[in-house]
Image 1 (spheres, rainbow, N blue to C red):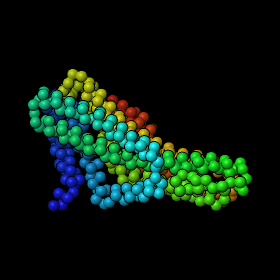
Image 2 (cartoon, rainbow, N blue to C red):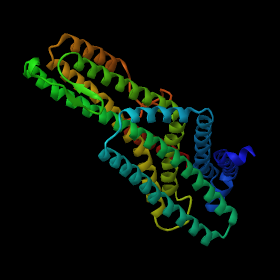
Image 3 (tube, rainbow, N blue to C red):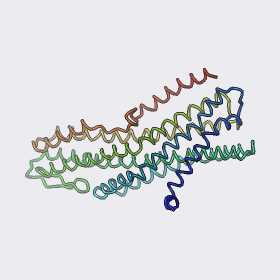
Length: 359
């Protein structure tokens, strides 16, 4: 009855069983596809499906644990409460929906056709139900990990849009600060700033800066919460994507697996891994850059104003920004930014040289 009421638990249990099945049969299946005369090569190529299975198990276990403990629901509740106070405009909402649609459709377009065609060729060549089941389960496990990555990217992009919206209000604050500095305060009238903030000379300007500071505190806290929610999943996804790229390149160059004469699968799979890896890295990198952009606005505003109360509030805001780290990490092992892509390429090249020496 409990399982029937929790379809996510049933799906997770089925995925765990499929991962264990594939992990146990990996070497046998690789041997049936290629040449078993080299034990070392067979063991190395068996690491590919095993990496997919282990990555899927880790990712799914983390997702299941976070859902059971209610951490995801708490995070979504905080974000919903923030968006109720600071709603995004219609243009921003359309842009967010368009981004999510493009990412999901692109992932489906580069994953599903290649995998379906691969299964078709395997069936036509080997006529083995066990072989088909093994590869179908491996592709389902890979798709499950990809769905988790998409969920993270959507959440991260939402935070990026929050930072962009807040930075837009900061830009407006800077423009108004120029006006306040140029004209006498007695000539000024309050002007709306963003959804809930008004700007004029005097105390209202201080209140506007304080509200922006509280917003930045909340979004930065949401970044930390999201990072904590997906630390295990990010480690599993990035590691598996790196390993799959490595073993696919090794398999093609060493000519271990021969299911088709063309390199269609190789190019399709490498494109998939590169897109998914870059999607995670670039989304986190842009979000971090938007968070750091606030520091530039606050510094610029601080140099333009002469009001002591406002400058004191800006100084406190700037001290907070300098002392707060807004970065995505994987258990503090490495920071997820664009430098991670170049590091992966260099490390992968080194490991490929080592693998070819084993051949």
